[in-house]
Length: 127
Image (cartoon, rainbow, N blue to C red):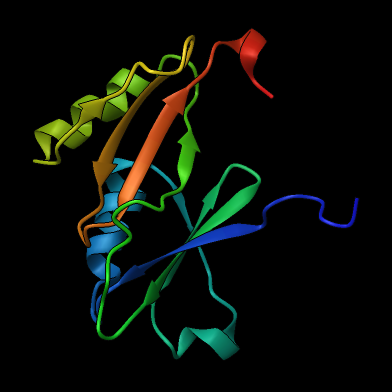
């Protein structure tokens, strides 16, 4: 197989959205911010580590949020309710979805209107 995996997913934010991205992704979702290469830093945005992959927040002008397309972020077992509570307390809508048997998951939106899915699978069902 030529493709070995997914290195990163990129979502868009409006100009000046870096601080809001840090609060949401770094603070609420507890992702580690990673440095952008110097050659790309001038274009704005912020990058985060998400397990073995990366989540890039790029600047888009004009900004158009991803309303249907979304990353599915896998959460450690037992942490899904914790993250849902943090997001709810911060004012983000949480929409639980039980249509996949054995998978606890919900959808929310980031501060820029991008759709996100957070899910936890039982250890035996993890890929």
